[in-house]
Image (cartoon, rainbow, N blue to C red; front, side, top):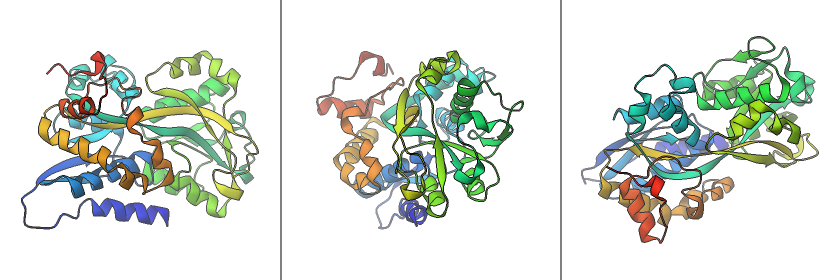
Length: 336
């Protein structure tokens, strides 16, 4: 039911009627049910309804790491940004290690606002017998899409807490977010890891008819050198998932700690300052419409729009923030 409603929301962004000529913009995001999908689709809907002469068309396929490259090359106009991904891109690290022009491409990206993507959920079926991360040895584990930043973080989460390595101690499942959510519902693998705000539509759907357990990290786990290094990446926080978040079928009796993360909505350098100003203004002045989509979307707040940001703001967005009295940090001021 929840996923159906979200699909209707996505289709609404493509609706545009009337005789007025429009400029069309392309947005890429993650698959239906994911936090970025819900946020970015809501962003597109607000813009399409409240900014005259523009329409954002949403494509919900692929990985965020690829979307950043596409935006940098001018193939798309909006993408899900992430402090960790931008860090990897500017430093030629992780999935960008072999992409020599990644740092140069990163200079073509601009931020609009950030928001908390939520907490890394490590979910198992209660009847799987898996009670802690130590029990995932020999199991099939979904860490995220190949070449995605979430996969890097999830891998460090498991390895930091257990010492287990993918391919040696457990089987790492390779597929995209959409396919993985369906595969987990079909019990094609044992452990599902997804950074998402709670309650996640995907996990809520699983919990409707199944008892689930959410695995967590201990304070000692966070002190492990591997996890300690991960937590130093931009956009990392310590988050928690409360008991009962997913109703009576969530078997955890206590809150569990995990890695929290911030992401954002980004654009390309060449976007018109005037258009970007009008879009930013429309989004924040109609935030109530975004909050109405799902309760957890209230985590998007003007007061934290620049939190954990390490990408220069688009000048149009920066103009609006200054009008609202925000002191834009020097490090976020674009020099172009």
